[in-house]
Amino acid sequence: MSTYDTALPRTAALIEQGIKDNLHLGAQLYVSLESAVVADEAIGEERPDHPMTSNIILPWMSSVKPLTAVLIARLMEQKALRYDAPVATYIPEFGRHGKERITLRHLLTHTAGLRNADAEWTDETWEDAIQRICALAPEPDWTPGEKAGYHLDGSWYVLGEIIQRVTDRPYADVVQEDIFEALKIDDAWIGMPADAQEQHASRLGMIFAQKQGQMAPHSFANTSIALERPQPARNGRGPIHALGRFYEDMLAGWSRDESMLLTQETVRTMTSPQRGALYDETFRHTMDWGLGFMVNNNAHGADTVPYSFGKRASPSVFGHGGAQSSVGMADPEHGLVVAIIMNGMPGEPRHQRRIRALMTALYEDLAL
Image 1 (cartoon, one colour):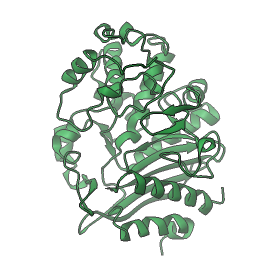
Image 2 (cartoon, one colour):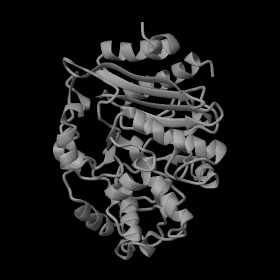
Image 3 (cartoon, rainbow, N blue to C red):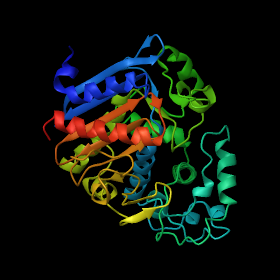
């Protein structure tokens, strides 16, 4: 029996049961408590007959979104951006067809009404995506800031484009230099260059999705082009402990003003409720939101809230989930950081039950 099984028995049992139930083939789990590592574990297989290891590079899906939010916040601190400035201040061609009033705050709180800009997985280039989004009208009968609906990816391209234009650097380079290099993470990317894919070919893990009752490789997410083209909303990749390192920095900022990336005031602002309890038209659930971060929504239905941090999470918890597969989070009240990815996408209902049970079990294992 491993240290992980001993320290986190309920969590270990649920991950193993998920393998038996065909929810995933394997998982990576990273947990730290008051900066001490509790688990940096690999369970099961990264693909059939290939054991999962803790250095396998896996897709984080939407769990990567907060990195873009942090880059926006850094530019806010530098007085290069304002949350309440219209997007058109930085991307003039965006301010057409009724989008003139949409601000950066609306994008970060998913209240802009741009769900029609979401294209999901596509081989569309960055430039074509920006051109397409700028040509769109927002959803009808939508006043920015007064209605909520989670944006899968379109608005995150816009945020990434703002970063590019203000810094005069490619988005992927800004992520690499200003976040990963600053945190001394050398094996994570949003947009993994072809030479890095070649260098780390033996470490590239796959993501699987339910197809006719069986787990099959995701039809697009595992392709080279899906890895290489930066997509701020979904194609972050790395071992899951790299995402845990990001949240350890956020927690250090929140608790001790010792973040390498942001001031304490900024961390606390963007990870606290910012939009109010609005009904989310995408998730079909009442939810609050931070500035690019999910917050504790248990008050709106602990048994039903999507992408739960568990029933025992403190009010100050913050993080983000990734499509039917992952979550990264920090809980300042407990000094807790968790990052987990399961390499199977079993459908939303099964994943919501899985992640809620896992996060609750983890708190129980740690007696929190």
